[in-house]
Image 1: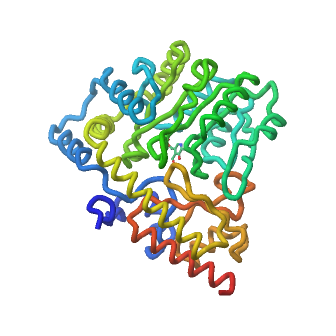
Image 2: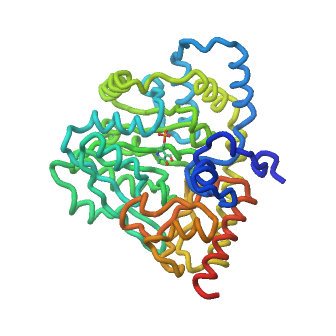
Image 3: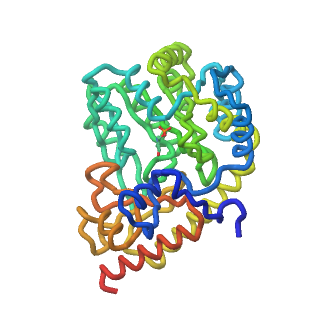
Length: 392
Ligand SMILES: Cc1ncc(COP(=O)(O)O)c(C=O)c1O
């Protein structure tokens, strides 16, 4: 029994999206939710204590949030990811997707194009469209479940209206962690076409072997032209508190970003989020290390399960994130209604492939970050469904 991560936390009365959708909207309490990207683990004890402590002073007024926070973030990311970041060019924001949206406005104007490799986290497309830019979706190359940037394809779609490349590293949903060599090639590509880079590194803490290489540090071009988005919310399971950060190495760009962030109100951080972030970075590193080990074991368990019991699912062990990207086109079910069938007949809730791009009908994303027993239940239900559909 793992004291920290095997414990089932009942989230059912908290309106938690992951559970709310299956319990309230589908009225299906027996459906096992392995979808949206948060974890079913209790947050680290020091974070719980810090929040309780702050609540004991019953005034929740305006609060100073000085340099200390940027220094804490820099200290964490410089140690664990080697950003080599200067805290004076880091700031907190209320969410990675708001930061991405602000970066889109700084780097481009209405009507410009934004290059997004797919499968991709759908809100990248959403934010591109809501800012009246044009998404140019470019499928990655897939080889035996491993996804790579397809530079030939990217060359064929990029043009002089293309202004931005959105990178997601570690990659949601494929679980790829890009190698230095791939990032070097990408840096040259972006420089050649004068593309600005928005690098969503929200999953930076979830790398199973080695450390993330931030594109920010790849070349002089990327140092000048990248806005990297980071966060403690995925790492410490704090997404409902709404906090994140950005890292830059170009002071002029940083000042532009700060002005936009202040203007649209994403630089103003909730006091409870501030307390949680302090307790996370100062006192919860040991918890994070244990979490990574637990997730690694869950990943290896699921990988073994897919290989030995469900070989008709094409998948690849993720190098980072807590997702498995599943090609289920060969599982005896209609691709169009796959997600619905898995929910209605299999009683498991996964993230539907087409959320990550229209070519991904027949794919699903599975979230590993739950107590092992819940993951096991979900996988066994999936097995039962697929065996019934494939006539075994
Ligand atoms: C790649 C990626 N970026 C951003 C987000 C959302 O971040 P935030 O809640 O800080 O906007 C997620 C959440 O799943 C994600 O996976």
